[in-house]
Image: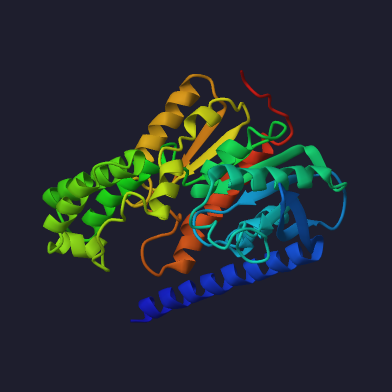
Length: 354
């Protein structure tokens, strides 16, 4: 019994030690950096965000933090902004257009244009380059999930970035991701191969309607045939029929469904760090497919490096409520490896390929 008490005390002391170190680190970052509200123009709209920049010295490296999907504000990337700031970077986190204090249509986060989001990221990059405290030759991008799609396009619209960090990035189309996500969703709900086959058939028909505007009757009939199935109810809790062929949301989907980041990434010779979670746990993007494509590009001479983390999903978190364990086992090692990689790359300026 005493042995277990001692072990328990050690665990508690370890947790307190970690929290104390984090508090000291946060205090140092707060003292050594200036936090200010900023705004920059992207086309005809104003994008607003937060800039963390070194209080002392000049010509710091810079990073634009590009958020993932959804109605995301600067808050979704502020943790990484503080992490970059702790290493002497000027870090820009901003509200997605139409969200928070940024201008733009209120539904643009839902019915987005990859091109518009890339324009915003590129404008943030050029804003950082214009600051006297930032070295314009050492500015890069950090993109997570959907943000990596955005970065792949934004990086082709600016001077060559010094680096790209792509976290949980899909080197695949939106259609590929939806097919993969549908299978993962059905399997995660506890259903087997037969339900998966029917779910993928339904998704293929849905994509056909989106792309061509034809085949809606077949899609509706197939959906109706599966309407009472447990697997269908699990992935469609509202039991809705597919959107009509001319529905505005489906017409928007037609514009983005086959967006493919590969051609854009193939033209960038910037060093890229690809960070992936566990292929078996990521239920949003096909990690194995993306890994294979990155490895092929690396073998052809692209300056890519890969960091793959086991036992974590799309958000690079352990399953369940394990905040401290995730911090110790995942976040701290990831940050250490990421900045070791950055230390070897931000000093040089890449070139755009043919």
